[in-house]
Image 1 (cartoon, one colour):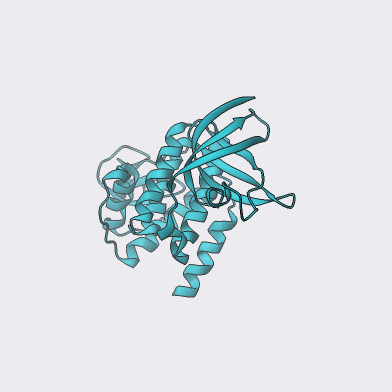
Image 2 (tube, one colour):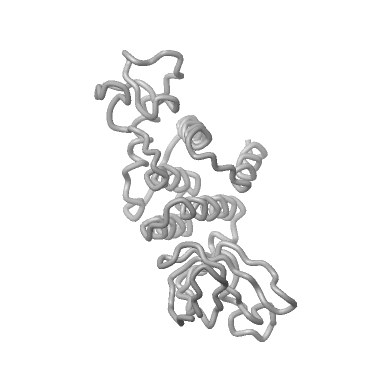
Length: 245
């Protein structure tokens, strides 16, 4: 058993015996791991406040590869209090955490953790949570091995494109459009921008609801066709959006 410190974010917590918790932590070093937090439910426990969902911290653990590790202590990096106090933010972040966990299962890469942290920090700063989520969804396609072509026509490499097609894997020019819906030119521009943008450099993004709808529809259809992922938190997000309309 190796005692080590990992940088991670708690994505799930559940009771384990009368006084302890079982944590799922996405870590930079090992991907998603299960960690036993002994006595964490006790009011007097020193680890009680550092074992809540969406806590970003340096965790000192007794690490057991492929098995249940044990938490020793933790130093909080960011508790994400702003996110936790807002229903929309926490809903989008819940989806982000579930999505990240699924992506890591298919392809462990420490850069995935870095992208997750960058996204959560921007949402904590009150940058539009829906757009940050879209950016992360687009960037994760690379780690899932299903990159869309947002540079040229996916069929002939013509740079003069007029829409994006899920079936054809990205942008399409006028010569290869068949029955595809013609998207707003701003949607095409933003899809490409969001795909390539450095999350750290984002300070403000204003996009109309019409463009947001087109972006979300393309991403949802792309994930549905190529990933096979069905995420409960995504369905919950859709219900919240319907209620708010």
